[in-house]
Length: 154
Image (cartoon, rainbow, N blue to C red):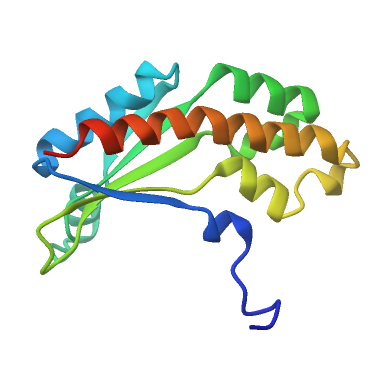
């Protein structure tokens, strides 16, 4: 596979799992697991309801965005460069797929996106600080994900 066809680590390392909960229970469950790891909920938004309400499309499966921010991640990002805050906060999506009886949970790392898109290198910051930020985010999200996988299964 050529480097051009190979997904960036941000996409390749995305977290994905399913939970054995009804959608309406899965959303607050996933939100709570983030909060128990000290992520603050910024907002929970039902994309399907927003799309239907604003565009009239009722063909989107149930989809919720859980937007969270961890104070340590935010602090470190701001210390590296305040412009990096434009890539925060972190978002986890909870969704259903047509023909699939599972509820999916998916998270793409905002800090890996900062690294992979070169946001920090464009400002001339220390690349090691960005790698430390990616590592810290990964450690914190690993706790969240372990709990989702452990407690979200029958």
